[in-house]
Structures are given as structure tokens and as C-alpha cells.
Length: 118
Image (cartoon, rainbow, N blue to C red; front, side):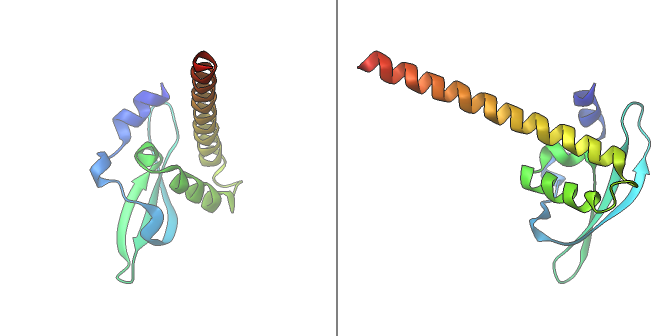
């Protein structure tokens, strides 16, 4: 269900910005969806303060550093943005779980390979 939410509401990956160049970020508005709360953010980039918008659905197209940055911003007002905080926590936990799982698999394969050579 979460996967279909991302597919339906995200922007194309090539249109997704990176928070690396963001100088200010504001939580802008709730976006109505069927199953999940979606929040629109406004980011301002560079000295010209070019405005970009993105939603929670765009996060899979961003790097994990950006997820953490958004999480820390909304965490400042956790009571107001509690559903967003919960969404970001879920996303970060799943990401960390997958990285750990893949790291474990790779280490087991490496040990098996070195054990069969010796």
C-alpha cells in the first residue's frame, strides 16, 4: 500500500531536488490522499532563493541524508507534524533494516568465499 502511494503521488525522479542546495525549508500544506497523510514542503535554493516544492511521496527519489534533514526539521514541532514524523521514522527504519540485511548477506558470502578458498 505504501509503495502504491509513492508511485501515485511522487514527481518524476529527474524533477526531484536535493536538499544540499536548500537554504530554507518550510512545511507548507497537507495534501489529501486516500491512505496516507502527505505533506507539501517548500524549499528555497541558493542566493536567488529559487522556490521548489516536494511532498513526502517524493522522498524515495531523494538520498537518505535528505530524509534525515526533513525529519530533523519537522521534529522541531513534533506535536504539529506527528503523522509526518511517524512516516519518516518508518521510512528510515526500513532503510536501515535493508542496509543492515544486505550488509549481513555480503559479509556471509565473503566469509563463505574465503572459507572455500582455504
